Image (cartoon, rainbow, N blue to C red; front, top):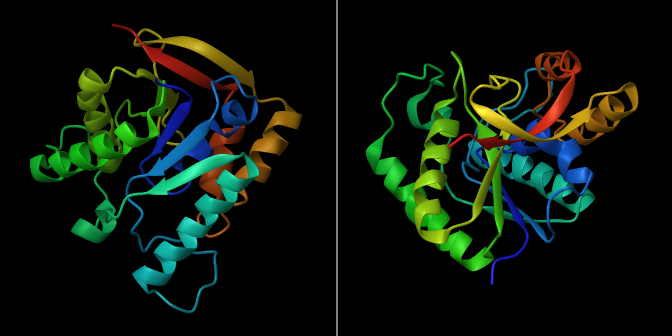
Length: 220
């Protein structure tokens, strides 16, 4: 029997930035789980003072921030042992025309399918890459999740892929919106602050300019 909602987070902080208010508002079925797909990283914001550049220590710090976010919202966290694009290629690809790595995609399909068969969610939610700036890791994760859906038959919903894009409404149906009032922005910022090592003014400013946070369904 399928039950609950699983949030697929390509990287630590992605689900929080894209959908913290929707998660907090309890508009999706419980229990909640969250899978961080690329848990190995060396990225922290330049404003965060850390004496080491060790990818192991930074990855551990980012996972601890994921755990704190999940604890705050009563979410069961899971982590997959994959390196992000910056570690794999020493750069981050954002161009949507870049070809996906077929071998890595197959690894993600196997990993995520095994884990989702264990979790058995009724609903899976992740970011929807759109427009001229699409993180390659987000595209890989989405492709894997769409392929797995053919066998596991969960309902697939999306968040806007903040801060990179806000999906054109001709491409999707909006299932739920939460207005970014001053009170809600303050709450979202408080949850984003859990990811102290990763947040920067670009993320905060991008969120502050949006009218609302959205839960989306792809138009068939």
